[in-house]
Length: 153
Image 1 (spheres, rainbow, N blue to C red):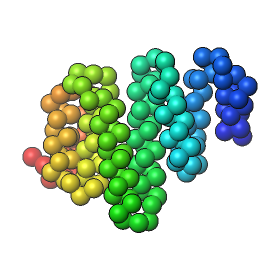
Image 2 (image 1 turned 30 degrees about the vertical axis):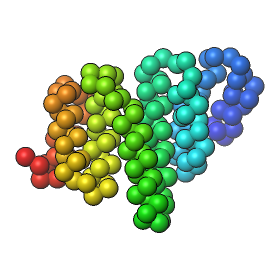
Image 3 (image 1 turned 60 degrees about the vertical axis):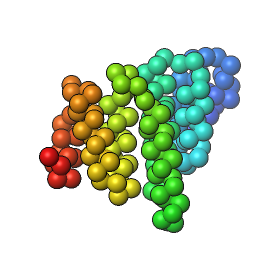
Image 4 (image 1 turned 90 degrees about the horizontal axis):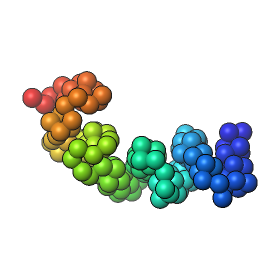
C-alpha cells in the first residue's frame, strides 16, 4: 500500500520539487521488498536531483545498499563477487573526500564489504582509517568492536 501511495505521488505530482522527497522512502521500501533494481533506480534518480546534501548523500548510500543486497541475493559466487565490487565502488563514491560529510560511513561500508569479499587486511585498514580520520564518529564503538572481532591490533 505504501509503495502504491508513493508511486501516486511521483506520477501525479512529479513536476513539484517537493514530491521528489518521496523518492528515498519509496526506494527504501522497494529495497525491503527485494526489488533491488527498482530501488537502485529510485536512489539514483533522487541522487541526481537538486536536493539537500544530507538527503543526496543518504541516497548515494542507498545505491550501495541496493547493489550489496542484490549481490548477496545472487547464488552464483562470481556474480555475487562482482556485485559486491560494484557496491564497494558505490560506497567509495559516497564520500571520497577526507573531512567530507558521511566520510566515516563511506569508510565503514568499504571496510564491511572488503571483509565480506575475503579481503580482511584491506577491510581492517578502512576501519582504522575511519578511526583516524573521524575520531569522533558515531560509528567508533561499532568499528572498534569489528576490529576486535577481526583480531586487529
